Length: 180
Picture 1: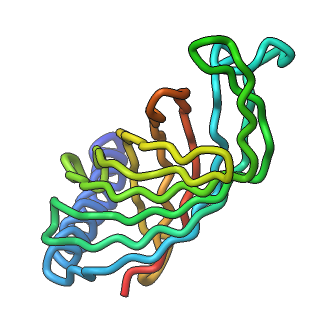
Picture 2: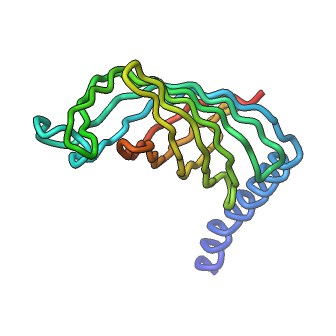
């Protein structure tokens, strides 16, 4: 009898949780907020083979940005991202010549597909603007959004950028956003 009561005490809260989660999911799908504005804080990793010979190791470039996301429905969205790098670094081109990148500004437009409960894959294009040379950028990535209360969301992300005729970068970051 005691074993039965113990099992009952463990199972009943689980059913309550699943019902609450089911209601939250239903509410999430019924009340789609179409726009999300986020502030992103990230680190871009540039592998050492893209850097000038004088550099000893890979670079971590701190970036901050602003994202504006529009949800077409519960699965598909478009996002406009604007990021500013807060570091100067030296790259090498195909001929081994040095090229300096100073406080580059990156603007991309990506499309996203949420394929598993707020877990999304994104892909898009954009430009990185910098005083010495502007670069065309192709971006792919993964992100996960979870609600932290009210309309606020926290979104960790992992991005891979291919910068035309220049270098690649892997960026991981965290965005704090509000759905309106």
